[in-house]
Length: 361
Image 1: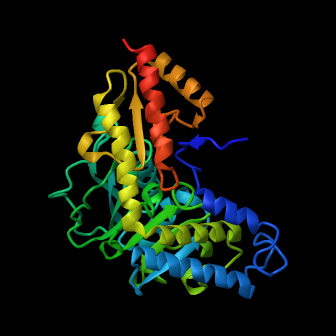
Image 2: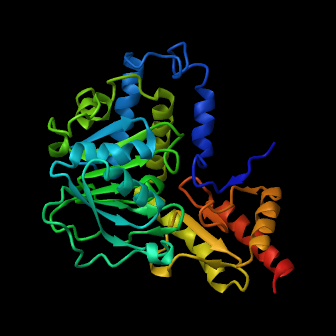
């Protein structure tokens, strides 16, 4: 059986080299006599896995010493609550809403304080990033929140908002490790691994130390305090050990490729190939505003729902899978994460050219 080209938005494609290494280690990791899935998270062997993963991530992203790296559970929906529980000291926060995930985060934060939406692209179905200059940042806001890459709508921030001195909090799930980032521009970054870093089940938070406080909102559970996990070095309770191990393999894979600068060039090449085709197609069109396009997620349509459905079915039969768009927007979406090879994108473009010739109007 041959592997397909998997364009899923998440859980998503992983590097074949990583999968092969994980398969080789499945029964026994090193000379431990057991699988990573079987070993104690308190063991020296697993602590070394965790420490190496953190060190490699710090090297890849240039994470300063005054930022903590936390390997957490609960996914993005838990972070939607964890952020305000830990950071909303004044009970006020500003949110820029550019898609479903920022919208959900803002809605969740309303349970803990006043949420002010200072910019939004909802008026045009989140197909663009709003103007980020001269934002009405609240003087009493504890932080400004963004979702930096919008998986569903295929938009991305190519410049960060002027937060006027307020801490920037960013959900970077679907662009995590896709290129270099200046961590110092953020107070907190977090991302679910299942889109671009590893298997579902682990969420990575990178938080500046001064934001890890005792004075969280009353009623915040112990497990939802960043300080709990920072103090315990991500070992307060049993972490998702296997998932962290696979993330560590991905970090090593990225280092072997030359780091995030080299990865960014590969991602730009893949995205350019698909966007160039869409821009010249008479059948297909991209739905995101050109200047705000994501390198990771590319939504597109034919303008005919029946034809979209036919395209997805025939693409699946051709080994190009998970191209159906998100249920809230329809159409198609190709996610071009780090592990998607250029050959996969070329195969998609070749298929789209063939489909257009056969179904063009």
